[in-house]
Image 1 (cartoon, rainbow, N blue to C red):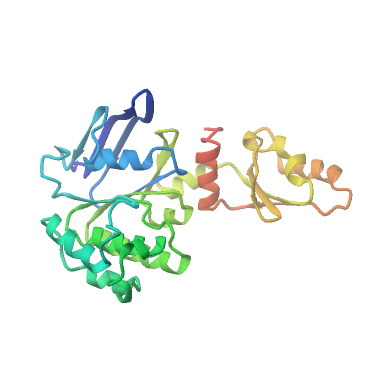
Image 2: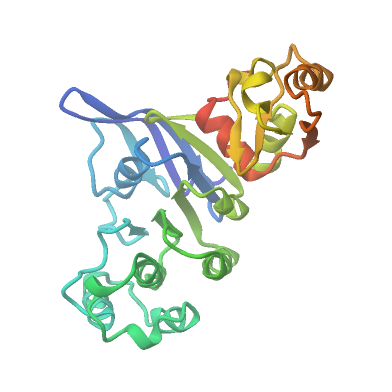
Length: 300
């Protein structure tokens, strides 16, 4: 059995009496992409900081390639911390020059990436004048220019439009094909397309972990409802009484004690015009996110 690329055991991090990360266990295999998913404010960034060695856990241990984090002087990993990596008073090019002196394994790969990310013409502008998306492009290019086996990325696609999102994904997957390992924190369901495994984080702890296909298969049946009063009339037949809205449509998870016919009957009574529609659907990554984050896998 190979040594895990990264292992966290019983990691807790608190600030005063406030616990932010609570008893997290994670193991990441070499060459794996682990996606740490959860909404903003649940402790993903704090956990990544503990995994990177930039913040000391209140308790628990973190090892990278079998060694306690920090024993190698940080030369086995590269950490992209959102909004904390680039220096606003420097230009993009000056930031690259600064990081080239900071990390002993920094390479010139960033030049190819900023070109692929369409940032080349903005390198001589001050980063404080960059948009959020431009800043992410620079941060990812600089992070991946460090030639190490392990990358920890904090919300790398925040502020990135859908057209650029695929380029980010392709760049990460190319590095993964070269044997690089990734732990990526994200609140965007689209990033699930990258993952070999997903770990959902809620209220400071990891609540569910598994390959995307297995997690999708474990989600209760997804039901789509549409109609003026559909969401409130049928909520008792959905897990947690919750429906998630997308325009005029709402999606929810069928309660184990209910059937789609029960929902149709309720809506037939509530919608005198007969305009309510009920259909089933295959779960999407957005459904998976809603189930594990907002309902915390209530039926599991």
